[in-house]
Length: 89
Image 1 (tube, rainbow, N blue to C red):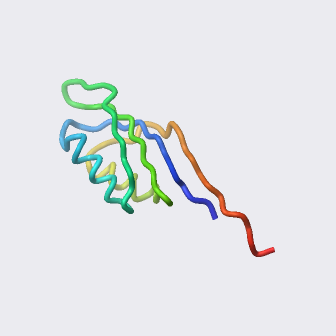
Image 2: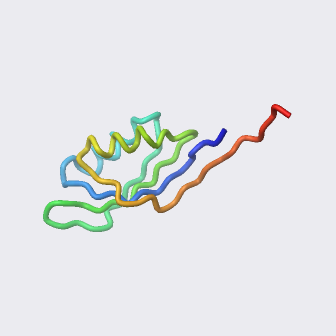
């Protein structure tokens, strides 16, 4: 079994919700640690670098939270995955 431990995302979101509210909504998915950096801002949107860390990130739940905030996932830029050894042998 593998566990997603860390993921770095490029996200485009509207100004509302704020970066703080958006990050909190992501962090509430399985008590994750979230760091969001505003890379670019225009009249209607913000481009964020979002780093999410946790013991076993449920990426589908993260994607749902991003969409519910009215944001779009542009790319997955980095991934850290841990595998557990097969102890059934």
